[in-house]
Image (cartoon, rainbow, N blue to C red; front, side):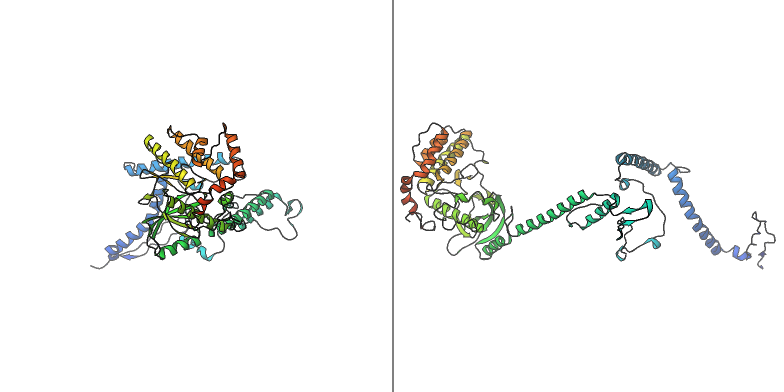
Length: 508
């Protein structure tokens, strides 16, 4: 069968006055070809698909010609309606919030539906690393030329214009220190007056200097629960030498020191406890400004005391605690055992168990019987400390006494002085007052008053009816108690070799 050709013989007139082109001739075999039909169908679908997608999107937004039988489609329509209502309410809130203010706040980032602009990604892609201009960053205000004004006639603007000057001040805030947060003032078209800008500039400079001071101070000081590089080096040397096995962490902090827990090792000259306490005296000087009275009049450190070198005072403070603990240990008073002293780091035995320190009398909830037992122990220790050790604790309270295994342990004796100290009896009276008040509140009826307790511990017989007269007699006794000093001479000399302290100076 021969192929039959279909030829278009007539053309329809065009409504625009131009005749349309005759249709292309094709053979009947081509029309019957399945491959050609498939290609034509694919070409037709490719043209129709974008239009259908666009119409579907438009109809979905408007809610027209959509089959709502599907719950998913219905939920999407409801969500879209909710988002539109939310954006409308957000716009009203934005207008109400800004009002007539010159500085407006945009809620654009909180909108649910953002406007979409079609664009070819290949044309709009920009490598921001290769461009110097960021289109999302507001332009800085233009500078005024050297002549000092811009424009002519009524439109002239000088460099002193309030608006232009305010914008320049906002742009100059970027020159502040990096840690000074200035915000996006340019993007909000913020206008800062000269007075405000100068105040912010001075504040930025002062904050920068303050941070520099804090950084320098931190490098050479012992902060709370932390140590400076020099102290850290001392601790590393103790571990490397085998005196300590490990340093586990901070146990407690105080005004003058930080206490760490450590596992003991071995030492050639003596034994090291299994659990040790490292008392690191803080090298910050603020805590010692009002504490020099405890050490400058102590005969053991009188010649070595100097306000011109405060860091030596800190080492003397640690050395003084070591001497006082050795005296107490020899007298049999329950206290930490001294292991080693390196500059301002004192290694002692740990009062506690399994890295848990023993509670203080303030923290320990003692019953009435335990409180009575603790009171008689404290009274006995105060008399031993005064008579046998020739010391006054000078800071005795429920915070410096630990309760472990049914016994009271004395700690923190770095400020302890001798009774011959110019303020020794005043410190003793203060200790008696703290002890008496604590045990009276604990319900121990046998606790005497502070004046009676002072006479019991000191052996003096001051009979004054009121506190003012009692303190006056103590002050007079401190100034003119040469006999009191003579009575303690022999007791003091007995500890010259035991606590490895410097020689006495009374004979001079």
